[in-house]
Image 1 (cartoon, each protein chain N blue to C red):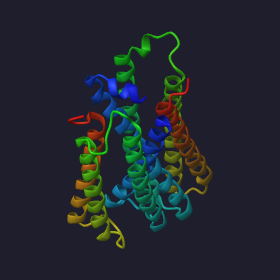
Image 2: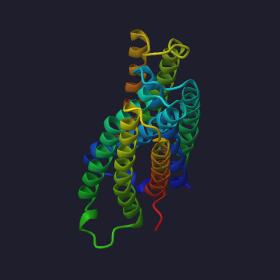
Image 3: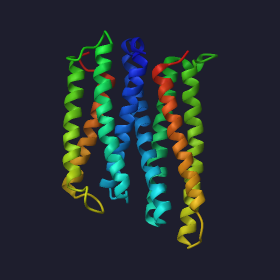
Amino acid sequence: MTGTLLFLHLLSAAVLVAGLTGLSARVLGTPVDAGALKVFYVFWNGGAAGVLIFGIWLALNIDDYEIWDAWVLIAIALFLAAGGIVERALASYRDTTGPAPAAAANLHWVGVLMIVLLLADMIWKPWA
Amino acid sequence: MTELAAIRPDDWNLPLFLHVFGALALIGTLAVAIALLISARRERSVDTLRSALRTLTLGVIPSWIVLRGSAEWIADKGGWNEVDEPPDWIGIGYITTDLGLLLIVISSVLAWLSLRRARTGEAGGSTQLRVATGLITLLVVLNVVALWAMTTKPN
């Protein structure tokens, strides 16, 4: 059960990162067409839902971990903050062509950095 | 897996972080490469094809290097390289990554040949892009199988 949950959690993370990479390509000015951008947006949201659902399920399933462990709470906080930031950045370049405006691009990269920090939190598990 | 995670030595954290980061970046850049290859074929756009080739060479290949290098680092720390018969999940991981490099190189060459044709105004190149897209898609599927093997550890 734990192995399957971990697989689904990481598969969701891969889908989320695929979406985020697609949005990042668009931010950099890569000619991602509107249809592909929609798919990447669905990946970003669908992956995020899977990461959250299977991540919490995992924390509940493993005896050594609790949902209120510091590293789990840090992960949820980073996850929600990154989601909000990437969405806010996306609103300012979704309907345009060419590279994203500098302010939106900066916001997007802050969101990407938070996702990387989230991964680091998952591996190092501070205060676990 | 859970027990392994709980007793995992702290000095495994950096290679494991790089391994997961490399795997996620590989999947992400492969997804972008697929989208650009499909778009380039449909729109017959040289710019999009150039971006697809750039994604393969500057995104996919570095991600593969991080993934493969960190896998070797973890295997070394875990002593898996000194075992006569390593577990199946390690074998699946090695086969996927090593075959993956071959698929990436072939796809990149096909995309480059197609770009060269498009630049000189030659007809064709669509089949090459179709094959490159198929190979990259196959690699994504293989990576999902490897992810399943790494997390569920059959046998």
